[in-house]
Image 1 (cartoon, protein in one colour):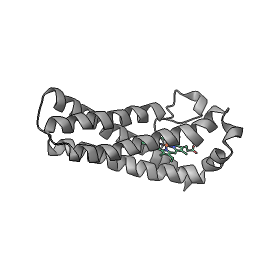
Image 2 (spheres, helix red, strand yellow; image 1 turned 120 degrees about the vertical axis):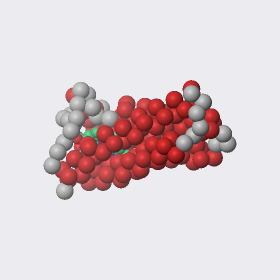
Image 3 (cartoon, helix red, strand yellow; image 1 turned 120 degrees about the horizontal axis):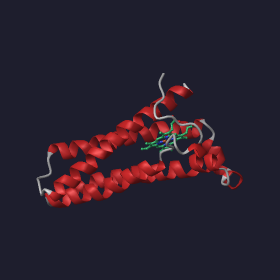
Length: 154
Ligand code: HEM
């Protein structure tokens, strides 16, 4: 069960990154080409939001069942150890912040009055969320964070 959840969290990261990239590219091209805000713009950020929602849920399961929350409660003891600091505090808080930005961004885009304003809000909120997500992933080359491969499989 534990490994299944970790495998899902590993794989879903690629969906988050794919939809995040699509959203950022759509908003960027929409803004510079001054094109209307279309259903596909809406869909890309909707799928980005949904993949982040599922990733958050799976992340919370890992967080509470793998003892990271207990480490957060005794943070003074763990903050000097990079892996413990990363998963107990940094990964969780940065990803939560990105998730909040994605949700606030959806509302901001919906409320924006013009197509240009919608593209602008989409680029701003989803762009910052996307950067936060990329920066907070335990990539395989960040060896100090332990072994986190590009892909896990069942
Ligand atoms: C868009 C959001 C997120 C992405 C892209 C993401 C991505 C990842 C990746 C790639 C790993 C490494 C998996 C592996 O070793 O195969 C990981 C591990 C982990 N993530 Fe996330 N994550 C996200 C959000 C969250 C959130 C919000 C939490 C907690 C509330 C969380 C908690 C964890 C934990 C606890 C681990 C380590 C599991 C372990 O080895 O014990 N993640 N995450």
